[in-house]
Image 1 (cartoon, rainbow, N blue to C red):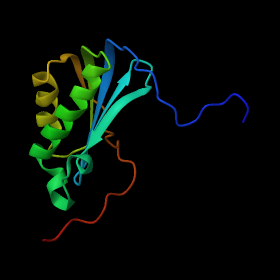
Image 2 (image 1 turned 180 degrees about the vertical axis):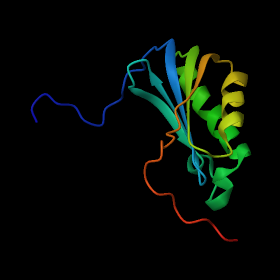
Image 3 (image 1 turned 60 degrees about the horizontal axis):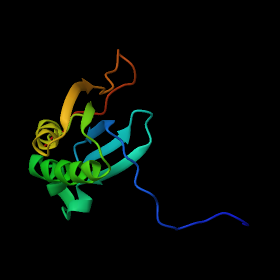
Length: 128
């Protein structure tokens, strides 16, 4: 291990343009900011904002997650993002709005939710 430094302080990258990946599942919302190549700058989830269990999947939790992740991204110098939405969760729109309100310019909103073209058999219908 000669010459390798582990656990040291990382230098802050200045990334003016990036991609915001929003994964909204039925149980949680993940917001990840990356540069154009896909290297992660910062991220946030419902659990990191002290939400537990079913409260993680609410639009309010998604809004707070997106705000916190946006602040971190702005500290890294991010000003413009493309947004990739993934999943059927309830926090999709509120997360996009929160990123916009944080002062980051959104250039593109893309929905990358995988839709089967009659692929696998779906799960059985939920009975409540």
